[in-house]
Structures are given as structure tokens and as C-alpha cells.
Image (cartoon, rainbow, N blue to C red; front, side):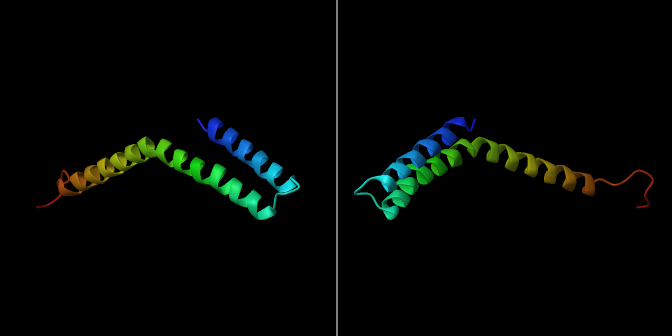
Amino acid sequence: MYIVPLAWLYVALMMAVAEANHSNGTLLGAVVTFVLYGLLPVSVVVYIMGAPARKRAIKAREAAQQEAARAAAEPTPGAPG
């Protein structure tokens, strides 16, 4: 699932290296290239790809909380009262 983001980060890293090693390139330009072409887009894509998993985790947590509340509300067999 993460092969494409990793590959894109590799491409962006190579672009940044080329920028830094170019005769007119600078280290600042390389960092900006890596951040704007690599980290920023990949972080957005990975966040969007993780949305279904986050939604499932939230639903599972809410279901567990409801089940715990339901179990706490039911009287235990043999208990006085």
C-alpha cells in the first residue's frame, strides 16, 4: 500500500539531489524541492488513504464503549437488589 508514496519520495529526493548538485542550484532550493514535491503531497495522499482505517477504528471504539456501558448497566445474576 505504501510502495507508491515511497517511490515518489525517492523521486523527489533524487530531484532535490540534482537541484543541490547543479551549478546554479542551492541547498535551500533542494530542501524546498523535496518539501514541495515530496513531503507535502505524499503526506496529503497518505492521510487520505488512511481515512477508511481511521473511520473503522472510531466505529470499533464506539461499539466497545457501548458494549461496556450496556454490560455495566445490566444487573449481575445473583446480586442483591
